[in-house]
Image (tube, rainbow, N blue to C red):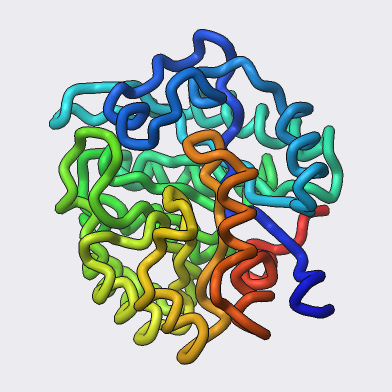
Length: 290
């Protein structure tokens, strides 16, 4: 496959919101200037797939982490087995409706301790989820909190990827829960667990690169970033140090696929680093859709 023909695979596609399903977070709308957009709901999976086809995006990781908009220090994650099953059923249904297009990812609440481990097993064994999402700003506990370790153990045992938000969040939530260096001890404790850092970890970009360099099974996706704004240090790492660690992700509908894939294709990455970034790395880590 030539650089020009590099397969494109989106490492993070959120389920489109149903009309009235969620009130757009005002802080996110303001930061990303989305206004009257897909973020506010109303688009369908058929709309998403049609846009992927138009843009030449072959597949992606379809994700849902149920949550509410809450004040800064109040957790927003919706939790419990019923919520988990309802979400997994939606995701698995869309994966069946569009064979060969999506692997699936579901948010699990690490605050549940051992129950979170049971939720991971349900998600993977009964619904075929390939990735477990943790969003510390919504759970209210840090990446390396001991409550999260049963979840990490179950994900590792089940062969699931864990994706974790790192860096200052868009919503008005505490940033320190998502500091990138907190990945370190989790990766040390679970060396076989594939961990994908989402949002790059700004302002701790140096820590993000350090984690990519140190841990063989730690990766990063550029979800939440318009690619033209991705740090030169991150791109230099992908081009010169390790072309197999960085993934393109739209974070639809927070950012539009059109803009992110156009800018992603235009980045100054070449050869293996470009092919890996646009899709090959994500497919290697998450697996190819069935």
